[in-house]
Amino acid sequence: MRVFDDPQYPFAPYRAFFASDLCRRAEDCFGATRFDSLTAEARARIVEDGLHGDAVARRLYGGAIFLAQVAVYAGIYDDVRGGRAINFDGANNGFAPEALTYPVPEWYLPAASSLDGNPN
Picture (cartoon, helix red, strand yellow):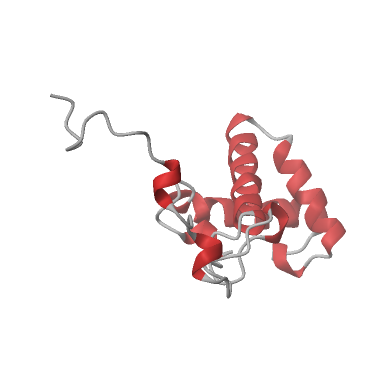
């Protein structure tokens, strides 16, 4: 849920409309006043309904799904544990410095073009 309110992502200004649309669809489809009170199957049906709505709804629901996937699979808020789905271990999750750096950086640098490093 945090990602929908994050001002770093373009979804934040539309979160209130998205939440109200979820609740409206919950009431239309199931007579429930709150989307979050529905079962997982009912919530999936509501989201599916939004994905088949008008052009604005399709874009809104598609963006929400994409952003949720980014938050979960990329672990954007969890630098410590990382994102297991993309095989990211997190920020120095106990790795030794040798595992995070090149042992001899000069091996990866191009040869110098002159003795002092200047081409002229």
